[in-house]
Image 1 (cartoon, helix red, strand yellow):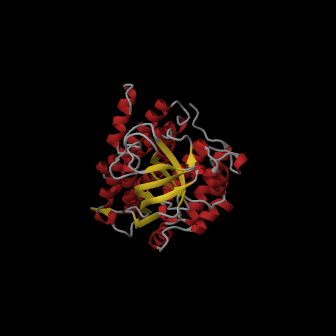
Image 2 (tube, helix red, strand yellow; image 1 turned 120 degrees about the vertical axis):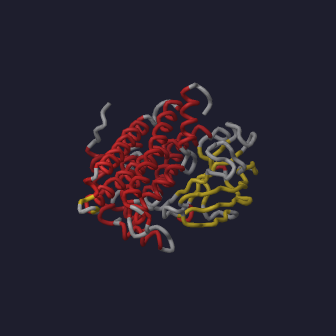
Image 3 (cartoon, helix red, strand yellow; image 1 turned 90 degrees about the vertical axis):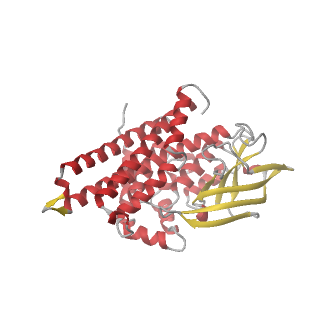
Length: 381
């Protein structure tokens, strides 16, 4: 299998890497996370207007660069190396993914707004009782003339404080956990009846608890098929997981590199600790975990266009490897650095926090092991 990148993809990687290196050093990131807004809207504009990053995975007909999932993987890996805060995952990968695959009356204009840096999306899918079951929904959207009335609550909506639009999963028919009866909606973040409780997350991002109280939506708010949105929801979530895995490889690689540099400088008994054989073995194991994670991420990304069962198996396998790798590489990095590794002044602690959050996003290791097993045995995931 050919894992070589095209010239255009290499140029995209160079562009993103230079932006992260020149504009997103560790001190700058710390200032961003401590600011009132928690992100840099001007950086978002730079990504859109000067660098064209936000158009990377969209068709040229929409004003994009004509790329796809591999381009998302490249961007997310480089963003992981810099712990970039700005909501590329929620807006371009997830919001853009729903609009590309699901269509709808607003799709064309909203994709153009994403590419221009004007529309920012957040994914409101998780509910307190749902765990990782995408179909377990108490949020409802009931028919109201030609439109709908949305009621319910969504938890830990990452990036919601910055969003202009929300993608919301809701039940339009059936019982709480039925596969049928799930519908996806685009909801303006400032719509009447939408209330938020914003808070910072442990890894420096911002999230919200969102309440929908009699939110009126037009028929054009529907993305994809009415009552048949679960396959689309699963597809875009798998694409998000693959992109998240790519971010994790960047995070893990930076933790390994930082630990290696520290071990070469830190001395005990008159010698750099990098010369101690037991730590050499540990850092080799860290390197192997990073490389395995990269390979699994590439495979999952290449299989996103395969039939649903094969796609889901590949994505779950990658998420399991990423989850285990994040834990091993992160804990090893902190152990070699010692207690100072978790202080706010050292970058490695911030990478560890992001790696820890990635472990649980869109499904834990145990969840994806169960999903992989069920798919392998031909059972419902």
